[in-house]
Length: 79
Image (tube, rainbow, N blue to C red; front, side, top):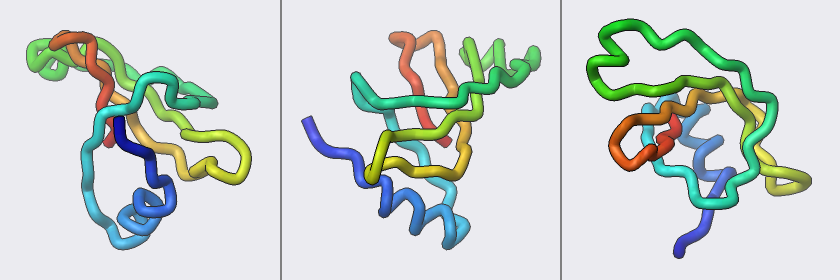
């Protein structure tokens, strides 16, 4: 299955790295703020976009980041 390394994601964020990952089933996602999806994004297959925070307790990662849900298999990607 794999495992989520929030510390690594935070390090990449501090370094200004742009990255994409699939959220694991059962990922703890909090503080959702829905963002608008424009026409170009819709044409590209984007269904929804949100700002979220991941994790819970000591394993949480606090910077807000964007998730995008696409039509293809209703996959959610983190940006």
